[in-house]
Image (cartoon, rainbow, N blue to C red; front, side):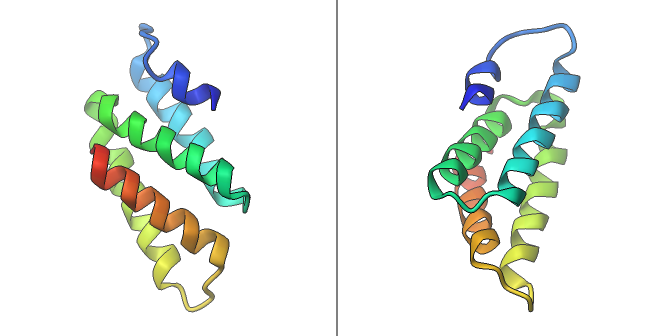
Length: 95
């Protein structure tokens, strides 16, 4: 996934980059059911959490809450549940 490669590129507007990449990854995780895409997006999110700097806590907190909501939802959807598990795994390993 291209975003995973771009995470390590230093730019002056790093907080903007972190926020933008987190939003892109959120869209992918929310809108796909392809297992390989979910694996790549969750891995990139973990990478982002590992190198994210000052915004890391906000990104991690938001993603953990959302993943737990997906897993606890009464209207459980397997694709979101799968995404939630992958996100929690990557954040636990990288944040």
